[in-house]
Length: 111
Image 1 (spheres, one colour):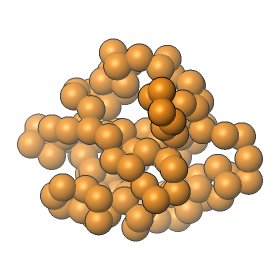
Image 2: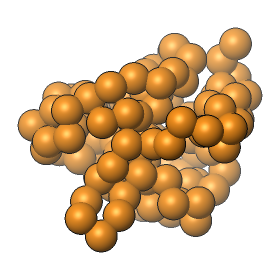
Image 3: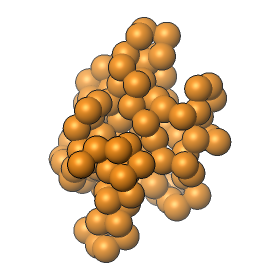
């Protein structure tokens, strides 16, 4: 599945991951929390990242109001993909995805 990888301290980049809970949990280093955005993308992060002291990782404005606590950031690595009626799907290969990656890197202050 094609994703946007947002690892702590690194630029957001296109990456591939197997579409299975095990690999999602491995990517975020724990149980997953899924946060929807109004754009059709979903952010998948570690549900217990803050409690477990994982490093801060800023998120974009439209996800801030959706996160349950400390909405300026999530803790640990997160990924972005899409979702349909069947479950998670890869992100499209288009200009909107390229724009999202640029916005993520700007918002996260990573050049």
